[in-house]
Image (tube, rainbow, N blue to C red; front, top):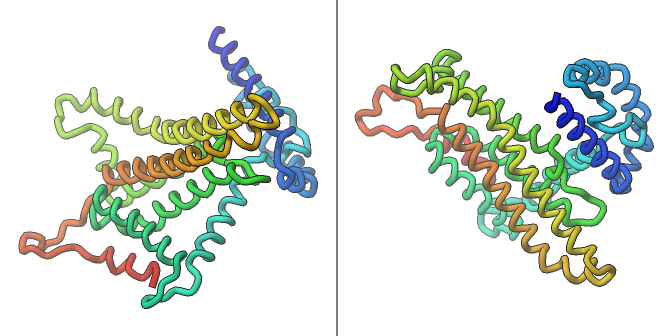
Length: 309
């Protein structure tokens, strides 16, 4: 009974946060809901709300208590709009920085991309191994998308979508599904599950459930870590800005912007670092029949070499 009361209290707080976000949502979110909110609301009431009624009803609460009232004004959440914009911005920024590729006279944007690519490549080679370069597109996509999402909150008319648990949990779940898919694809389902049992057979019954639970917790730990730091950073800026308005609203937060950029970079680094560590657990270099004679596996270089050429 106490657990249900705690759940209801948490749902009430979530609804309050949702209502607050609706009132303070950027103008672009309000415009999106103005034009598409009615259609989205009809879809939710017809398809998704009945499902949430059954799921949340089992815990003694309702979708309205958890997500706030169903209205056309909040039918499309702010973080959905912001994340969609982050995807567009990520592609646009890369296209702008890329410019006209040149081997003899690379521009500043091209050099920035090359440094970023080489840094992520080096991480993959050190953590996973040379064979892990085939995962470069996914890892680099995570890096660019999360960094852009983290930095969006520093600009007017935008909010950081990674300051919402729905987005960070989705990113964590994407990483979780991807590395488990790689593990099953490369090792087969049985061998993928077998690695959770460890190398010592007589303690496998104890190790297996612990490792399995730890594996299922990973998407939540990734999501909470990313959300917590971005949310705390925004709250610190908001608190400082409201200490003595209007003076603190313009002058004091400016020095803290550097800290916000640092937090955005660190959280991006941590997310892709952990994702690579998880990949390294399930992906192994292919066994070459001639490996004993000193031949090396370099197929990944052929895959990644054309990235900026």
